[in-house]
Length: 124
Image (spheres, rainbow, N blue to C red):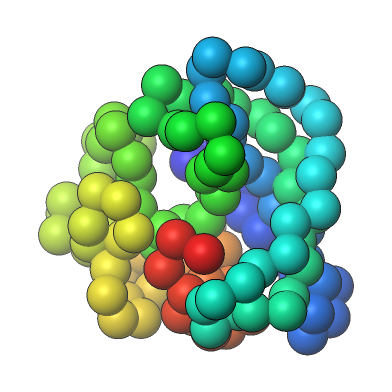
């Protein structure tokens, strides 16, 4: 997770961020407006730029790049940030509670985004 690719809020209903899409149909650098439904973030919109692909991402899925959102298929975070694997939480979905204070300083704002702007939504 590149710390300079953390999401940020423009206001209470709009944010910007980054995402991965399926490796079967890569669309690098394209931007999409996502509107969340059926989660704590319902009604909010996020404009994301595609900066990565994954073979564990389905054709109808955007894998949002959010510190504290789970590291996915590969855990490079533990080594990159010299941190305990326990702080990252579930591989897909991240911690179940706000543990941002345990995150490396560069990732704390992005982690806070999940618990603040996204209201703790898990895989929205």
